[in-house]
Image (cartoon, rainbow, N blue to C red; front, side, top):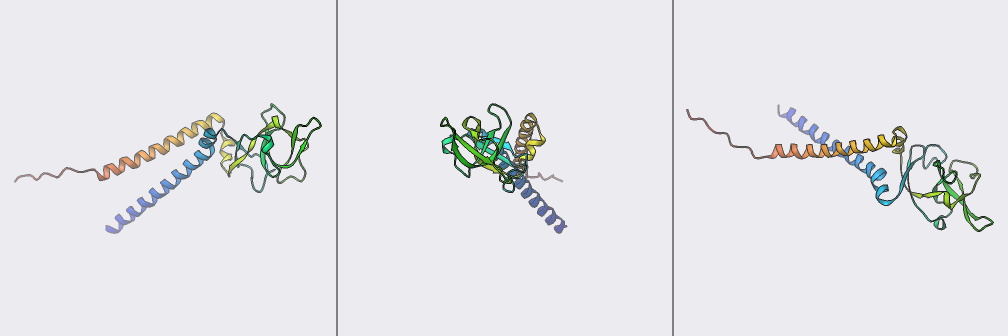
Amino acid sequence: MATSRRVRSNLRVVGSALGWLVSGLLFLVICASVLVPRVAGATPYTILTGSMTPKYPPGTLMVVRPVDLDRVEVGDVITYQVESGEPTVVTHRVVGVGYRADGERVLTTQGDANKTPDAKPVRAVQVRGELWYAVPWVGHLGVLFSPDQRQRLTYLVAGGLFAYAAGIVVSGWLRNRPRPKARRRMP
């Protein structure tokens, strides 16, 4: 009997530790992919192709923050619009900096896995920002879900984490609450 209690107690401890670990990891992923970019004015993008492998494989979430084009240097990773004003963006590394005949600064970019630089130079109006940080695999979720579904999923996960925390608090309170003393019956 004591052995089965010990086993249940150990399982409860392991289950609780795993629950906290998963909750902590989910919290970190949500912070890194949603909260921090919103607070910092950055934008998350997902790598869809293999042009930046091996460092940034498809499914990597790239968090990009605005940057002044004069601060961009060779070796920086930037996200830019393929055509100015169009929604399609590309994330590649800067391999060259130059100037057009009119004096405008332009960048030559290339994917890490590509053998040749991109055909067109990148102008300042196309640049969405430079890579701030990347989170591997998280971008797969962004591809699987629409923006509305991602928003609902974020609320669902956050609500689940709060419910789990509330459950832990309530179960601890129930376990440790003072219990009234049993009254003895008179014979």
